Each structure stands twice: as structure tokens, then as C-alpha cells.
Amino acid sequence: MRCFPAHLLVALSAVIPAEAQTAPARQTDADAYTRYELLAPGSGRFRIIYDVSATTLGATLYFNAIRKGSVATDEAVIDRMTGKPLAFDIVRGAVARAGGVTGADTTSEYIRVKLARPVPREGEVRIRIDKTYRDTASYFAQEGLLVFSRPLGIKRNAVVLPAGYELVSCNYPSQVFTEPDGRIAISYINAGPAEVPLSVKARRLP
Image (cartoon, rainbow, N blue to C red; front, side):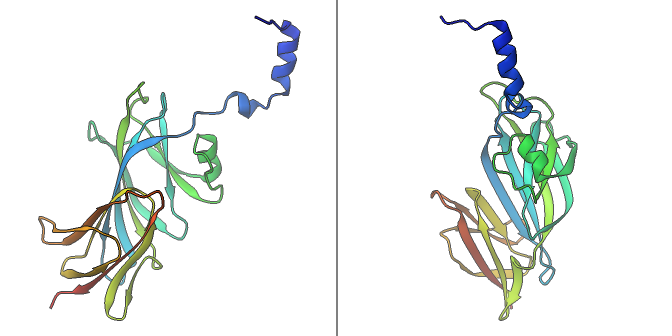
């Protein structure tokens, strides 16, 4: 085995950027599911319930992007194992990138969640992020119909219509069902590699 003098190792460490020596592990996750609940027609507001498992070994933080063009309010995060609330704050994309989010947009904002426990080896920490978006480009009225049109990258999704509305069309193969409270919902699994440019249209029940 080839050995290097101690003074050479010190010199090499001096020329390696500090961030490269201490770079965090890349953030990974699994088994993500998103539920969109469309709120009052005309408000442009919809609730998002996002369940996801953080899987990066030893991670104590998890970052979730706030999509550009959407205004987020009413955020809350819970630990799915205990049901207890988790501390979080809103940070810029540069902080998320430094925290292991590969390719994080430095001009965007992220929810930074403090996990209840470090992610164990070959394990996960499952959390739920609850937030409300206002995005009139995604949720709007058009020609007498209510339209939810949004590209969705998560593989498992559900969209719940407002009370008193029925489904007119959905451009992606989906299961249609009725919630216990009477609201109509669609649910699907995206088996492909690309995001789904979902478009759901609804009308008020007579």
C-alpha cells in the first residue's frame, strides 16, 4: 500500500474546498403521497397534504420545496409515528442545497423540517406536511367549469373536489370515488418516468 507523508496530506486538505470536505449527504426520500383538497371556488386556494419518508441515513432535517408561483400559508408538520408536531421554518434554496437537496433552486423557498429522530440505517422517518397554496394559475373557473390544472411529479396523488361539485373530466386514468363526507375525489398512480400534466374539470351539482 502506498503511503503519503503527513505534510503532503495536510497540504492536500488545504486546497480542497471546505464545503467539499463537509458536504452533507444527498437528501433522499420514498413512498411519497400527495392529497389536494380544492377549497372555495374562485379563491384559487387548495390544501396540500404531503406524506413522505425521509431515508437519508442519519439525517435530522428534511426540505420540502414551495413551488414558484404559489403562495403558501397554514403550514404544519407532524411526525407520522407519534402524531406530534415538528418544528420547521422557511429557508431559501441556497440553504436547502447546502443541506443536501441536489439541484435546489436558490431563488425558491423551502420548508425545513426538524425530524423527531435521525433516520436509522435501512430505515426511515415518515412525516406529514400540511400547507395551503393560493395559485390562480392552477385552480380557476373557465367557461362555467372549475379547473385544476397542474403538473404533478409525485407518483401517488389524489384530488378532492369542493363539496357540491361533480367530476366532468380528468385527463389521466384515475379512480373516482366518494369521500365519507360526500365530496368526490380522483386518485391515481403515475407509473411513468415523467410528471403528469394533470387537468381536472368539475361543475356544480344541479
